[in-house]
Amino acid sequence: MMKKNLLPPLVEKNKILKADYNTVVPGYLHDHIYSFDHIWLIKVTPQKSPESGAFRAKVTAAANNLTGDLVISAIGREPVIAPPSDQDDLRPMSYYAWNKGTQTFSVFNTKDYSSYTEIAVTFD
Image (cartoon, rainbow, N blue to C red; front, top):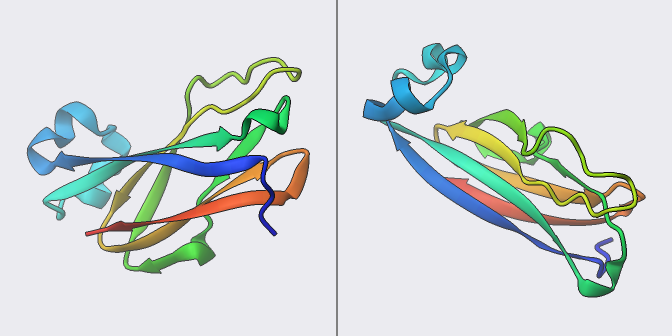
């Protein structure tokens, strides 16, 4: 059940070309991505409605919400440290993705996990 205190998240998709892997992508991923001519950097930013009050969001990319041969690697949230508990936590979550498929990203209200929204993003 989706509740109205969440709006669909903002999703930014940025293509990273193979020529830029050494300067942009962390070394621990190079063995996984070397055969792809590009990968994607994705940023999922939670949104809320004005009437929500203090809101703390959790962003997930569950493996059972993935299709095709797509691989997702979580980078983390920016900034790493959450704001105080009486303030909104709408920090974006970032991921790398490679290969082809669709990933559904979910954003949950941490005070009520029945309150969520989802967005499917396709990668080619």
